[in-house]
Amino acid sequence: MTDQDQANARKGRMVALVIAGAMLLWIAAQVIGPRLGLPGRYALLIDFLAIAAFVWALVVATQIWRARQNGQGRDNKG
Picture 1 (cartoon, rainbow, N blue to C red):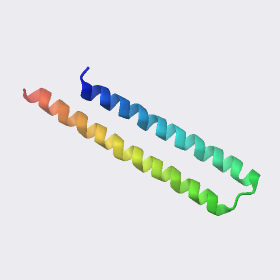
Picture 2 (cartoon, one colour):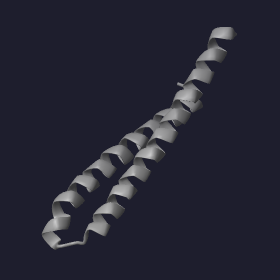
Picture 3 (spheres, one colour):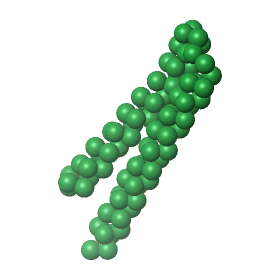
Picture 4 (cartoon, rainbow, N blue to C red):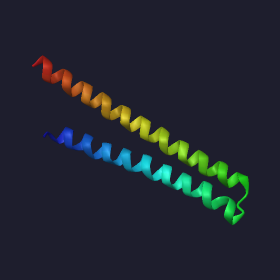
């Protein structure tokens, strides 16, 4: 396994953790928020934070995919 493969695997694990963590925190906030009597603006803020985490994860996942595509292209050519 090359250094690039290890870096991609590390990034992939980070993406998975961010997605899972954002989803768990979002679900917890949706359950706990109303019980604590938090205003709706806090729910909206939590929604935006979750969306930001998902967008970040999508960008990094796309970078990983492109890096793998470029690596495979070099392997096939030479």
